Amino acid sequence: MIGRRAFVAGGVCLALSACGSKFKSYHGPDVTRVVVMKGQRQLFLMHHDTVLRTYRIGLGFAPEGDKKYEGDGRTPEGRYYIDRRNPDSDFHLSLGISYPNARDIAEARALGKSPGGDIFIHGRTWKSSGKGPDWTAGCISVGNREIEDIYAMVRDGTVIDIFP
Image (cartoon, rainbow, N blue to C red; front, side):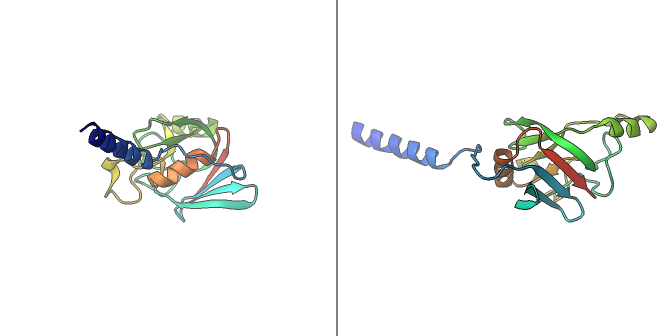
């Protein structure tokens, strides 16, 4: 009986270890820049002028135009930086984007609004399945396997340029 329990317990441990981790490692060229082309729905991880990886993306629920204020559903456009990471994100994993910058704050204030914040590149959650490609409040979404790669490859301080 003990032999059978040990066999089953060993099988369970083996099965769980095969599931892997959401934390991958990356040992290739440094990602020196992230480029987002909103109109093409693509994110490029760059090493200087060389594209290392390309990913399909989703955007805010109002994908056209630059983010002007909190709640407008748009994804910001401009130059920002990856400024933080959240391994415990509700969206699998996430990388923070340094929105808002001084220009964003001034534009929102001119409209009498708050610029908002908490713009991320992130994965998906079960609540977002079936919502279509543009479902976020202004973030950039990718699949969970894709965010695992991006999270491993992109370091804090990396430039991110977001184009229309």
